[in-house]
Length: 471
Image 1 (tube, helix red, strand yellow):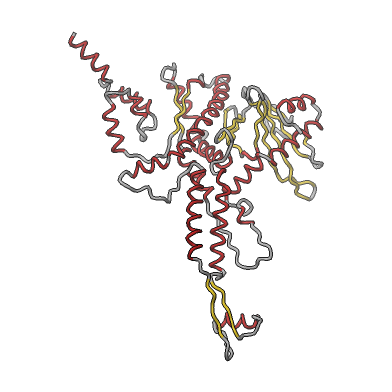
Image 2 (tube, one colour; image 1 turned 90 degrees about the vertical axis):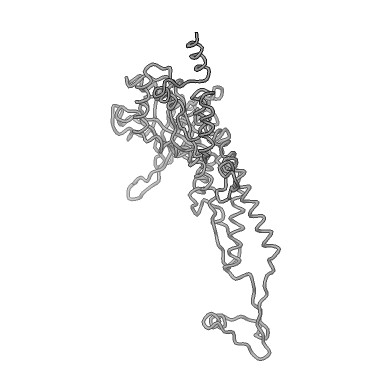
């Protein structure tokens, strides 16, 4: 089984189709059993599908009483909170000192709108928070660079062991194919290196062969291979963190425990197990005829000397214990997931500050993800700018691009405006604007401010002007 990039290179260089087929089968199996399979399970948990949430498939041996399977969507709530907090519009800025900056900015804005980048970037954050990693594919259609997000449970990137640079990427997925009179499931593979895409298709014997149905159009139609036209592997990885862990992944056992407790407690009430009926003088058997009569009339015929009563469960102490345990589990779920429970009141005289402090855990997690995503966006834009340059679109140095991530953060506008006014004459405009949570693009606003009010400057500038006037 190939375990590293060197093995993959050796198998590919053999040009033996049987060897390459075995390699692909091993890689797909390994990915499904490990990272890919885990990511798919996390995705199903996020969807709250029946097979995705453990409490839904919990089995009780010889148990015929009421069994409630109640899901509490902590997983989805934590992922959606991260997405809503961090997955907002990302502003791409070209350095102010770059020649032709305005034309470059205009080109990037048009590309962003054409590719619906705001929505794609938001989905990238969601996939990464949900499964621990997200992937984006760059491709060319009708001569133009395009991009799309890939399902992480069907994608894997293989890196050089020493330089940690991407050497290969594989995307695999299944389709329904008609074989004779029957529909069969077949796996398709797209294999990427730094120059080419090679297409493979699973045949009826479970072997992978070059798919000569691909590409369907163009100069390479039917060859099973084509250049992807980028100078590097065009599949970019966007991890949620270094470990590739999903946002709620450390709290999975706590989420399952909460589901179990609330499901079992509800079953207790629904089955009327809070109290059990006892009968005296009624005989030893509770017959089906007696049960039917009780359900129909609500009356229990009691013979002379007989009696009926209830044995109630004294859950006074247990109820308080369960309530305490559930509250502690709930707190730990959000704490270990670096998230916030929005159902909790952050009251007090400083409500905004209370929320901001509560959001610190989420902000720390967002900062980690932001650094990982910045690396991914820089690699994405390196490939894009090289493509645009080679095809005469625009000349952009990717190292001059800056990425501004915006947050949905509670704002105390009154306090911030007061700080802004006090700092206007002391700090550079970009610095003081950068401290304001309601200003999304400090550089652009600072430039506009200088254009509209050129007489405004820092205290040092004012003193210098005053000294010149006196001199």
